Amino acid sequence: MEQQRDQWATKLGLILAMAGNAIGLGNFVRFPTQVAQNGGGAFMVPYFVALFFLGIPVMWIEWVAGRYGGKYGHGTLGPTYYLMARESLKPRSALWFGVIAGMLAFSLTVLLNSYYLHLIGWSAAYSWFSITGAYFGQNTGEFFSNYLSNYGQVFLFWGITVILLAIAVGQGVSKGIERWVKVIMPLLYVFAILMVGYIFVLGSPVDPNWSTIDGFKFIWSPNWSYLGDHLWEVMLAATGQIFFTLSLGMGIIQNYASYLGPKDDVALSGIATVSLNEFAEVVLGGSIAIPLATAYAPKIVPPEILAKGKSEALSWIGHEFGLGFSYTSLPNVFVSMGDAGRIFGALWFLLLWFAGFTSAIAMYNYLTALLEEDLNIKRSTGTWLVLLLYLVMGLPVVYISGYMDQVDAWVNFQLTLLALFDIIIAVYLFKPDNFWKELHEGAWMTVPSWYKPIILYIAPILLLVPMIGMFKSLVGSTLEWPARIAIIVMLVIGAVESYYSIKKKYAKELEKNEVIIRV
Image (tube, rainbow, N blue to C red; front, side, top):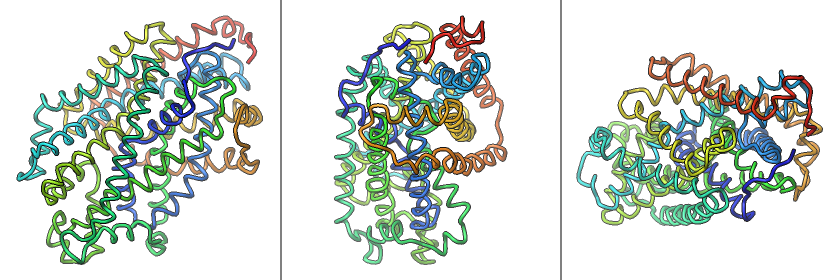
């Protein structure tokens, strides 16, 4: 039977929340890293191909699945995918598809946030360190190492972040999450636009031979020779980035979409989410880090690399780029700006904090909804239980060297695996005609019919590209026992919880192995 739950108060709030879910550290750190490491302009061609043939189709699939589950009171993947799978399977067979999907979503959300929330905390800390000039006049690499060793500071900024998340989620969807994103998302775009505007007029502050324009040329000049020589590697990086940047394969989009009304649009809303994310990533994220690093290359690139020429220096920046680069090399850029660097650095790290916060709030709500809907725990209580879970699972990240990288390798693979289940269950088992009809229920646009074979055939084939690459990475990595135990425990808990939540509501039809409540 259809059930009414808390819903988004406004269409704008929904779109901003969905965009905030997609926009994260990956837009402003991972995207420029992938661009720089994969030939600059050579990366952008397969990137847009993957966006069109993989990103948009899977985004629609997850919006449809979320709204469908929400009609029956479900905001988590286990029960939702059970309902969709039983369109083709007997209830007892459909049960296991729901259990696997719910298991993957639960373990993924907990494991990812065990370290992702610490990264957000680092950004909050460095925003403070920038405005106070704490690392000015110091070796930035040593400063970062000393900060990570100062557990009191690490947990202070982690705690500030997670407590604010708990407050926002505890207030509910319309009165909590929606109100917060209506403030944070506009600020995120304003800060990013201000920074991009400054970078455009920055020119060559260190050396006339180095300019932000060189960084823009590096990104937007097609490098066909590089693409031809490294086609597989660049395709793998591009499809993987699309996958990460849109927050696909996590169950989070489905959770947010579950708070829609049964006839609220999902087709145009999905496109709007993609568009806002891509503007933040390609236009804003691509216009800050790489051009800024290029302009200050003489300050942050080793002299022996600079002596080899501009192409070698850009290659070095690409291979050194990432989170470590953000907290070691980029602070050197802010120091070089003088007093203006304090403001610019604070804006940069606050931008990262905003981006991470809006993604984390969605994942936080998924676990809270699981406790609320499946275990009948009050939302206000559930939010603090989730905080306690995050604290326990985050301890190894702080105290065990290498733990974060090991868990991250598994999380990367699990993302693609869950997205594959999205397609199998929400399209094929739900039946393609049912999916197409559900996509257009209350839609504000008509999806072209030629997109149907893209969803059915091309998207799953493209999904195999990052999936194979991440599986190879996982096989080549070493999982120590702390990481193994954490992964196994979260998978077991996720499986048990999903099994219990489905059995609790659909016990009669599972016992008879016949659908009693017609969907």
